[in-house]
Amino acid sequence: MQNGESRTVDILRSALGPTDECPTIEELESLSSGDSIATSRWSGHVHVCGFCQTEMYLLQTFLVERPREASQNASNAAEILATKRKEIFTRAFPAPKGTPWWKSAFTVRRIAQASVAAALVLLLLGAVFFFRSTGPQPQLETRNQNAPEVLRSAGFSIVSPSGDVGERPIEIRWEQVPGAASYQVRLLEVDRSELWKASTKDSRIELPEAIRARIVPAKTLFADVKALDSSGNQIASTELVRFRLVQSRK
Image 1 (tube, rainbow, N blue to C red):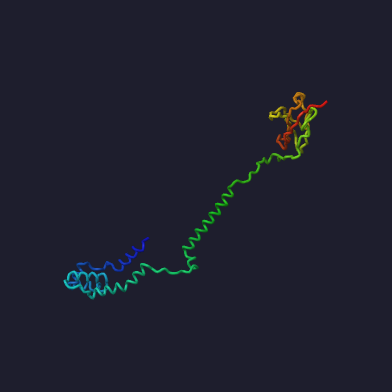
Image 2: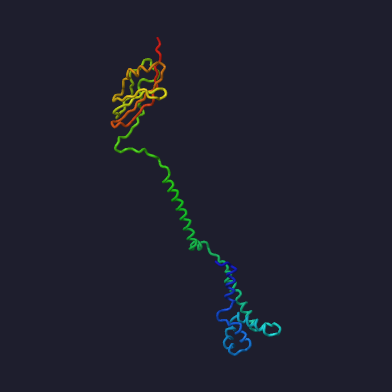
């Protein structure tokens, strides 16, 4: 895009510069000397062309040794320039026109700017919804639809032994769990190493003599029980229950 200065130069050149119909300097010299052919051909053009009138004046001033007095042609050229001066500068520097806001709001440029702003808002909203939908979601436990649902029983606990006992226990008893097909019982040392493990379908199980012999006074042991369904899946379990044989007083 041209700047204001180059645009002004182009307008002045087009208004004051030569045209394709202007004669050459040699032809103007012939016209100035009174040549009949040049006069018949160029006098009409020079009469209306400000550029050619200025060239003729300069040529006559250069050729004729007399005081530089403005000729009639030069005066005409000056009048033409003065007449066109306002038009030339008006075209070069047009005055800004005040436009009401309600008219400028519906121009193509304003509508394009509003469209870009609306597109940016929609893009931002889409990004927010996208990141919300792809963010971490609550993880649901994956379950086998063919397997029975696993239930936890809060009331499932070991009945005995528990805490300090005065006699060596002969069995472990616990609460019955609805839907349980079998139970898995364990005895653990203080360091959580497994001392004994067995399974039963009842809600009680007897301790073998070899295991009972290892239950000695002041030794702490732990027991837990797991309830299993018919497929062997765990459906409930107890917490570790501590028990200890205390020395009987005589």
